[in-house]
Length: 333
Image (cartoon, rainbow, N blue to C red):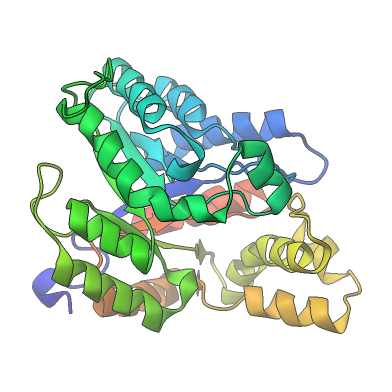
């Protein structure tokens, strides 16, 4: 339980993860520019962090080079922390990652977060193009140790300009990855979409096994979840529809598509399997009116005792999306 911390409006940080989703009728370049513009907007709303993601070979996602995009976001903003959610460490040499974050921290001191994940490409063709396979995820722990060593000067090769700098590292993980975060004394980012019971179990295990480090003196949990807020419950639900359809489409046709307008999706004939997957993808998200969202988030935070919420909402209507983030920020204040 969260003890005396009370409701969401008293003490939990709110942050943003944007995946540079492509919208139907638009291109990848526009999606990247939208991400930079969105970062400026949520900074004005008072959000704590703005993170970008890493996806390869996905037609509906433009964010393939997170450290490059993070540099553009940091240059376009002035206060908000900027980082990655995350760089997939099995895809990269740790020295190169250290150098990239060293450059970011040197250019934007005190604002850079180094979010790290253990996933490899989603399909075999992408993994082959990256020169990796699924087994590389098992090397996450040793690669993480090596990466952190470039910042502390514990490697034979000096990782300039990372050497001596203190970026803020985070591990995006559940299960085995959460144990790696605990062993290294790093903050944990965990997604609620993986199932609440499994999520709570992973968080409990992380806290029990956590070893204090130079990076973090105590456990720190960032809960990643979709949150949609609107004046009515139905309008909030409609915000979830484009991403839910994209997930259903990807699982039936093997390709993650751009986001389509809600009305177009609801008018679309679906097979029984598509309908089932679509409805499954709509479940488990926090959505509703401001009062409904406060209750749902408070219930989730009571179960997890998370220190921060990382909001990952995507939808076709950018105006409605920004309104959702604005309403959520008002709840925070």
